[in-house]
Length: 415
Ligand code: ADP
Ligand code: ASP
Ligand code: MG
Image 1 (tube, protein in one colour):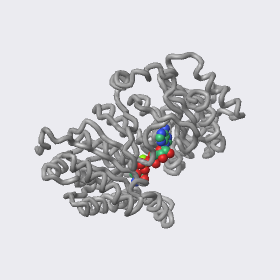
Image 2 (cartoon, protein in one colour; image 1 turned 120 degrees about the horizontal axis):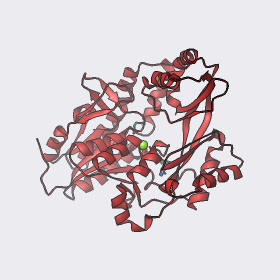
Image 3 (cartoon, helix red, strand yellow; image 1 turned 60 degrees about the vertical axis):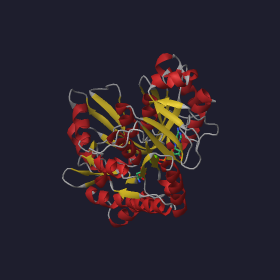
Image 4 (spheres, helix red, strand yellow; image 1 turned 135 degrees about the horizontal axis):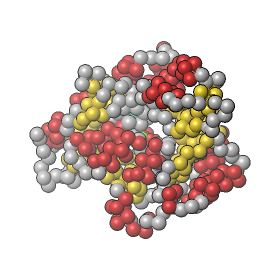
């Protein structure tokens, strides 16, 4: 097993799509990476596809097919990251440092076989470490891996963050920098609220909730892996060298940034990319909910929220949210599910979104829910469904009110 010399710090950086959108951006990243290398660090860089490449590839495929095979979509989409990684390696060589680009497969990212939503099984860091010991900057394609049957897979949209953290684990780095088009994690999406505050730190648990509830600054699975393997994440700007936000354990965060201990609500997250499915009038008997969600489970669907209404005359209504991009996969099943469960109607609503508050205060302080619902009501926003846990309260609202909802809730708790 190769190891990097003991006194050589390892730096793992991930650059997102907007940060490598053009040749000029790539040259800028190469300069930054080279400067780090020249400080004596062993540098691994994980990149996303350039700009909107992944969206463009998906659009191209949909010109040809409404339901392209998922395996072929992985073959198509993984090409995006190969372009940016090889260009970055070329740019680093131009700066006078030695660099090598590797695909996810070449770099040792082993996944299961679920195309477009693959789960990481193992990262074999050996090949990366071998290049590092030879003094090369290693540039790796984000968002992709290979199954044990040698099939190319991708990890799901936004998955390059997850690749970066997994590679950090695989080579024994304790930290991973996620460099993006914002200079940290804010109390809400800075594109939507006027006065968001940058968080100096955020606990793994809170960040995981924020990301799962739509704060796409981090892919939620990257936070899960970071928490499990205690990798500290630093979210910061890919352009300016600012301190950014540290995502770490709450013990460490509290100790280093003591003043944040009493924070009630850490942030507001929103998600417009959801659809609500309602099975109306299903039979009220044991096993029905199990049948419904077992049938959906085989699509590896990430069900975001489930609400079952009170029984009425031997029937129930079951509503749940799914990511809208996955809806067409399950639509066929929904019809047959309706038949099996005796549902009188299936209703799909794409014009919804969720607004959520996240923070330890949700559990600690009474009255958070009331304040949130009142803030929404004051704007005339109707709440469709509500879900809570000890770290969050989430409301389904009409999509055309979503931005107003985020602003109102942010004003209530964080301004
Ligand atoms: P990348 O291409 O670098 O992966 P993303 O577009 O996936 O970048 O994520 C960065 C974006 O996340 C920001 O431009 C911002 O609009 C959005 N975002 C959503 N919620 C937050 C938040 N709480 N803090 C910072 N950014 C957020
Ligand atoms: N390129 C992929 C996407 O656009 C992965 C990523 O950027 O993280 O979803
Ligand atoms: Mg991203």
